[in-house]
Amino acid sequence: MIKERQTLATNKIVNLLRKLDHDTFLHGMRVGEMSYKFSRYLDLSLQKSNQLHFIGYVHDIGKLKIPISIVSKRGPLTDFEWNLMRNHTIYGYDLLKDFSYHDDILNAVRYHHENIDGTGYEGLCHNEIDFNSKIIRIIDSFDALTNDRCYRKKGSIEFSLKKIQKQSDTVYDRELVKEFTKFIRKLY
Image 1 (cartoon, rainbow, N blue to C red):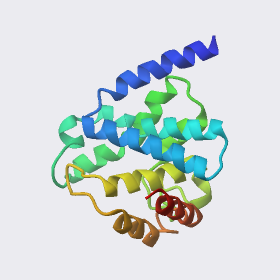
Image 2: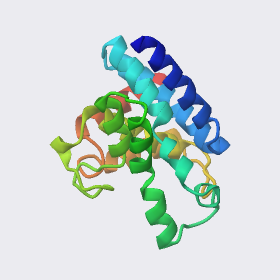
Image 3: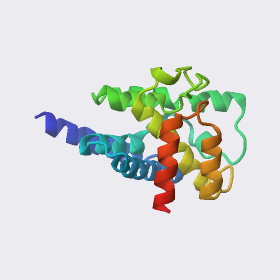
């Protein structure tokens, strides 16, 4: 019965994700796939890897509550638009909570824009940020940097890695960035 409810919930989530704009949908798929591969590289359990795959896939689902004109805007967001966009983490958390997902999933969707130094969306610091959120934070950024976005062109893999490395211990977890760098260099 529980397995059947989870399957129905997952099917509903997949249908919701398809309603996201195409770029956001593809971004989620790439973040999910890379999260899975990176977790396998870290030798995490298959269960944890599958969980991270799902989190990567749904991490931006809260953007469903943001007007498409803002999500796909070509150019800088106004202060109002930026404040609205920042709420996608809370919207995603609330949406998935209604489907009774585990706290590990809910927290990563809510806190994937937290920074190690406390300057993220909700101001959590290093030890207050869960492991899944730290992983998704790195991979979300890497994917955004290495793919064209509606507001800028993609950067090279090396440029993107250097940008992330430069922000170790402020935005990203230093040890995870070291491992991610090795992983990416092995992958490419």
